[in-house]
Image 1: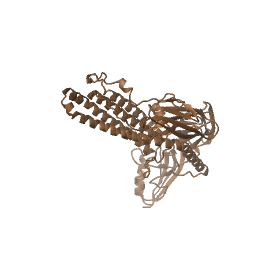
Image 2: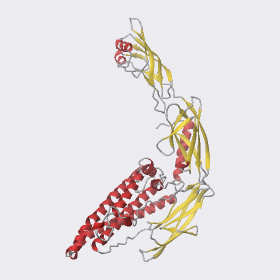
Image 3: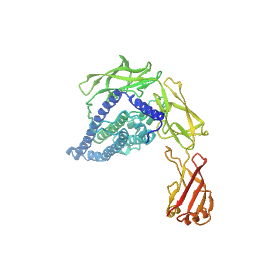
Image 4: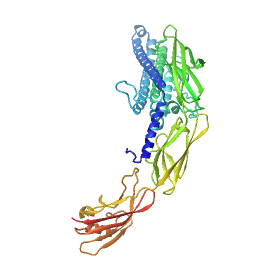
Length: 543
């Protein structure tokens, strides 16, 4: 990518880069650190579940070798009947876990990969990685939800609907499915009224948050596997198998999807215990000293943004730890968010004018406003959505020398619409090309190379767009060294071949040293539809 030559455009591009960097900085370090803490606990919990599930499979096979079981035909038959379903539960869990790990790796790669020294994400604050992989480009989000829904249904179907009678197994066991931790609830928001699952989980979520969400679903998958195996164990043996899984690390997570706010917008924070447990005993959450209601282990705090600059809230919590003699554990945490002013700009990705006949790429940039809340109106041009957030292609509709304007507005937090101004651009036509034959603009040349040329071409140098011209007509004057001159005209670009004028083909084959040939009044048609005179090409045959 070349740097723009005009100082003004260079400054615009640099300002856009600075704005992008500032927007990335709006994901507070406290939120990123909280995600890291919870993800670490989730990974540890998943490791524990792996160990438990492996132990369960091993114990099941050992139980089948128990002399007491072997001596009881009824018991051994029942364990043999249920064993295939135990193995299926394990295999289905491995398959979906591998798939979720592949999604996670795609996001990690797009966010710069892992630092080889720390093992942590290079760009944990990256807001585009998860959006691109799960929603806009690779669109893995809907696929993930579909696979998880199928997994949940298939795992439930491994449990008979009536006691331990495998003949009662059906394609679906909804009563069992309800007990699984995998759920697809999405909180409705102004940007996600339809409660789209992919949008609600991954849109503009920092990369470290998206990785945490995927690890949470991996943990849910392994918990589901554990529940199914435990149920099958109980049905096959008539014994209850209940292994308590300790949680080695605890932290209080304050998670807010909107750490950068505009005056009048609502600040929302989700506060939970990590690695968090819906059944945590006597969980109490307080924000700035006030108690917040807890539902399913989560407290949701809402406040109206006011003032400007960084705002801080103090969070404290306590719960009774069942894994450590019911000790009451206490935690404190602080969270910050930033209240700013709404701003938006337009960055031209090529230069500061619109050219007729080609796609002119532009990018809308907004500070503190979701992409879905930006609106535009255009005069003297048309805008077509391009790949990427707030990226468009512009085609001017006016004549050269006219103006094209784009007006930006957006919906801010209080529901009102704010105008960000009208941007005016000059409309220009694409520069004229020049004619070339045998990759030459004229002068001395050998008869062989020139006579073999197929056509006259129009060439355009030092232009940022892929603009192609086609020669549509030309006149030719052939002056043999000792003969009378011969003239001809063509209504296409060709010198030789089936589309060339026969008289011109004869001239090209008759070239000899000392001859001269003049290609004049050459005209070409550009992508803007206009036909232009682009000059002449004259040659002297010297060999």
